[in-house]
Image 1 (cartoon, rainbow over the protein chains, first blue to last red):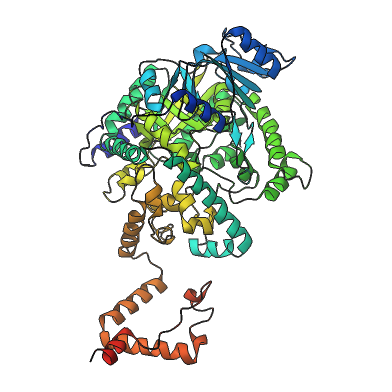
Image 2 (cartoon, one colour; image 1 turned 120 degrees about the vertical axis):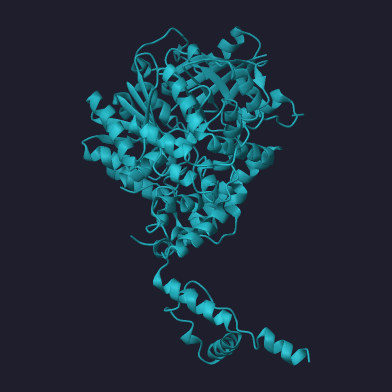
Length: 183
Length: 453
């Protein structure tokens, strides 16, 4: 613990003008249609979405998108993440979406193992259209009290442009992302 | 070691490639412009981000203690390292306990700063960089040339050849889609078999004890969630006060970096997975020294988006390796002298001081001013090369003696008229890559004398 004390002591020894903690950020009033903007952002980030009104429609849509492929939709905890390495399509619940960037908040309570949304080949997220916020500030107001071990904002399928700036979808995580939106 | 200007000379010898490098980075800068202009309150966001960082730096000790205590309650083990050697040692100790050979690592400029890979490899570990760009440069025994786009100096032909040698892809195949797929398969094997994962940290939140890691590829998560041990390495300046502050930084980060709305994955690690061990190492390594310097403190606000790289006319035309530092570009040039003044005396001069870096910086660091401050400090300390010292002294003497100045001016004009080769030759560094301007017939003073009698 010697270094801890040394570092904290070094910080203490510096005299810096006091700065107040800035008040919470209040974004400009967004006049846009939040839901329309969400759909537009999903397109921008390379996510595919399907709007449905019930589970039967969702199931039909997924059968069409992934014909004769088993879909994994269990949320019971799996101890060994490696056992999910063969999952082709994973279906999970998204807690809420963010219109400005197409990000969806995922909480580990909604999937079998933390690695699940990354290790599957294709990811399907079920989301209710009423759970879409305009921007990240509203999203973090919603998250303020949420206590989880792990959660993430996910926006689009995994991607890279590390080879000559050419965009390639499907780096290490899911190769495609489908959002099923329940109106 | 070559100075920035010497290394740049080699870089620009290939004109076509230099132009390509310049245009590619300008393309990224243009995407950043579009993304930022689509956010109405962009300037207000930058101010907020800068204010949050001001608050953070003036309360750094308290925030670190708060972060530590909550992270510990969350079940995370917190370590403190005052320099690179100590960080490396902590990682080694943890890795040794696991009795493994392979360690997967996602992008972390901080571990580059500490030369952690070299250290672990010397101790018998196989360190696998899992970010595609980093894996490419690792195969080539190179350092990343850009903090967000590590392999931006390479063309797809280069990557194709590297993968042919290391992954056995067909010779001549340079299709990015194909090469990325080859890397995906190769690295998936590594992810599935590795028990220790190292990641960087983009933000650590004092009031929740969580840390956030942002990637597009998903490599940090693939590594961390499959490993038995996750070691996250962060500089002490990465802490922010409140979870809600993440909204400000996540809105700014990817838009500034690549023009994306947000990175694909913004992962919030709060507690270790059941059965997993999670470590966080807080590193000083000169940061408290930088904190103590009024002129340079602001550099600690940096969120490593690299917007200043992409906009910099010097970086774009000299390439990241010319900066001989893990963090290149304008921000690297103001961070590096804090580590070693003598070795990095050239870097604050690798700039036109045009100020574009400061204009795009999402946390409003006055980068171009700090470059100028460093120039003054380094010269005062007598670190200038002899030629520069003599030149400046000579110039100062001439400018302080008006009659000498007039004679020298006249002499210069005469020489340029009758014997331009005396000036326009390879011995004059100003003549390199430049055409000397046409010489006026008379000086301004002479013009006044003849026209304003």
